[in-house]
Length: 517
Image (cartoon, rainbow, N blue to C red; front, side):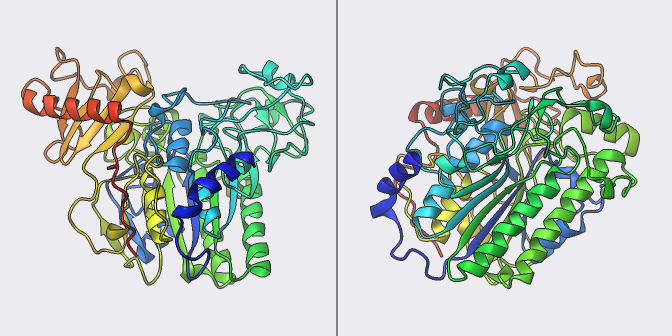
């Protein structure tokens, strides 16, 4: 809470004139490891029907050139919450927290999306996977550091957990520290406490066994933690927040951040969804995610607030290697289609993601937008929606995309786009217009030449002597021809622009962006 107070003091003179007024509600749904090709409205060859996500696209705007800031979970979620690229902060490179991992990447006093909304009169709630880092303490009140089950055993679960959502702008939180069914600690956190601590080891013998179930570590589990129904628990919590808020504070806008478990491996769909698709266990998991999106929308409609709610649906990075490899082989489904690469890679499949916005009366129904955008842009865009000005020392990589959302601006808004792959600061790339420069060799994440499962998708570098890669996405969207040697002038320009952005600590101009409504 002390972190929130610091942010509120900073924001006080910078907020809009009114605290509530006619500001819309905001529902941000973040899927996990959902690929561009996993959604039917982005890939007509998808083997999984996604009618509820498709409906969002029909009733709103579908972005075709949207990107996660990073190709893995933790840095993307940091950037979504702050509008700042994670490689700019300590431990914000390719690091992915697990178990009780932390501390939080978000520094005390750093402006966050929920803190900005809280300062502007919103009720704020986070449900689901946090994964930006937490601090747990042992019986001697010392922070527990390290990974694995032994670190979890050292935690004193009677003590407060620090650095989580309620310390960074959310008034309430229900969810998990990291990947719910993957990472050592299988227990729910409510606000800043673990109400039901783990009591013993996870019994994996009772869980599904299939090619998409292996990413599940033998950690410690709480008695109330249902491994195959975690997303249904999250849905129940989000519904409860919406119903309680609308009943008790009907005139106050809300911000709900719903961060799902799906479709991160292991693919543990709830029993009622198992076998529901022709695309195996992972297809069932995608189907369950789509159903949950439909249930959240149905709740908004039942409560009479759907037309005054901005709904944003997106994913934290591209599809996981295991799901891509097996889904291609077993079900002719390509979660990365039509792009090269997958989760952890600098190539488009690692970070080009679904991004859909629904806002009746403001965003045109059935619209498609080709503007280049990043999840970092959510902060500046929401600031424009609520008439809040961003301080210069906040949201340094966030651009106001509202003119594109409401179809008032066709010229490009973003001058360029930064990306970070699994190697963090060592594997950065920059995109300007049709040109994409990778400041490294290889994928930036997966080792295609050494992994038997990935070798069938290995493409030799056409400029193997170059220390970097350059692609023309207009003529070569599959990133098959490295032009780094043929077009050295473009390499020089983009390399210089990347270095300038790194040294300046920002990609957004220091001039405060005017709000646009």
